[in-house]
Image 1 (tube, one colour):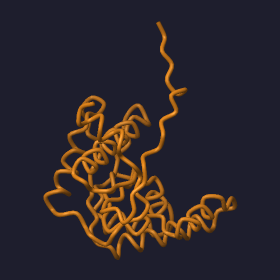
Image 2 (cartoon, one colour; image 1 turned 135 degrees about the vertical axis):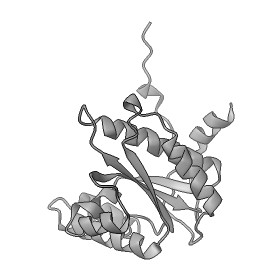
Image 3 (tube, one colour; image 1 turned 90 degrees about the horizontal axis):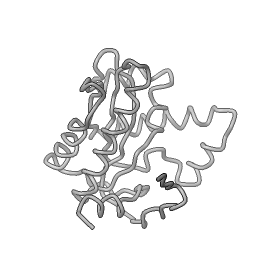
Length: 187
């Protein structure tokens, strides 16, 4: 198995981080991997924001939890509470991939997904624990959303596409077992 396939097979979603922030060299290499992703018609409708300020991360976490708690269906809120009550699992650092609407509408989501996957695979290859975190968008969905966009220096016209939690694992887990029934071969 080559190195890339090994990283993909061994990567896990970290839900318990230490306080240690990855170094500048690692963070820049991870961000660079994100912006090296291909995009439809090379539009690059993303902007990678590295957030090392733990107080902002904690404020975003609290805002997201407030929004989850206010939802009629409490299933997601209860699941996060069972896992410690933190959307971002106390990650000391995160990357927010901000995106700008593309044509056809929704193409930016595909591009965001490719960039985010590059980011987590690069992080894993450097020994940096990580997790895709769609819940990051909750912080931007409430009344504090414009403030967070300003503090994170979102370019004009951009929205939150994805959050990626980064740090070092306080606890490791095996990767999920792939369901081989999810593969169909035709011909």
